[in-house]
Length: 372
Image 1 (tube, rainbow, N blue to C red):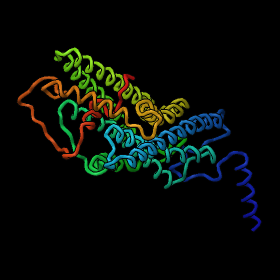
Image 2: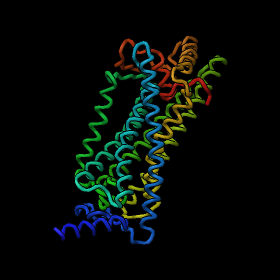
Image 3: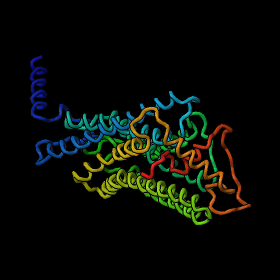
Image 4: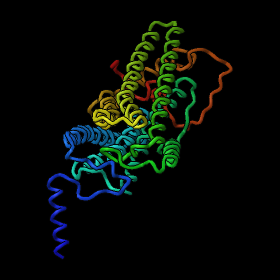
């Protein structure tokens, strides 16, 4: 009995001094923060403090988009949300899903000076990897869907609540998780992938480069199509309107690409560092912070376009009016730069899809009447 009391006192004393309560399982041995090392505790507080600050911004931004989307859905007469509002909402879901486990991850490490123990650590590592892949895949699918609707005039009906879209990206993410099974665990400051992991950083590295190339190619192609429409236009008023739309689209595409670079280039560097066994506080701090840049940029873009009003749909109505007028003044579709009698239009759309869905795609899924 006395020995148990003595052991309890020792463990409590070690906790007060800042040491971990107990050593985690062998898989997490490398995730114990040694506060006795030079700058060990300082580095922990820098990484966790900065990460938690930006994670809270992620939470606030994502919850704001959830609430705004819910209000617009309730106020809609047909309980339908335009594509321009659904895609930011879907991105917010993946950002929020990533922020929740990462917040628990960072907070636990900051308090107990070690990561979560096995098997909880592996679960949170898999959860973070899943939502990171979902975020990447959603960004890629938005670019592909936009390109298909604008350039190829192909529209897909993804079903109620776009469940087919979610089924596709969740299926891909879970498949990649299965391929990476066994590499989830404790990193230095959080649970994600073990330090010697090769498959997980390799997959993320490949997807980041592939999706970056995809959005660059497809969005640039969209701009070229719009430019061709402007060149072929013979009506001065029509040319001016197309030029106005082109300026808006160009600015929005620039923002999307910039947000992607800010969010995923640091993560790409983190993946390279893992593969090359490089360990530096800046890599951990910047990558953990950059994960949230997408959510912050998403809500800034949302507010800039939709404003602070919870009921206003004026921007959407304005651009529908402008595009309807433009459509009525030309014989060919607005999204078709050149006549092509051999072109085949594949239509998977429901009969009730309205013009504003097309407008959303043309404006890169963001309804706006401003020149930004």
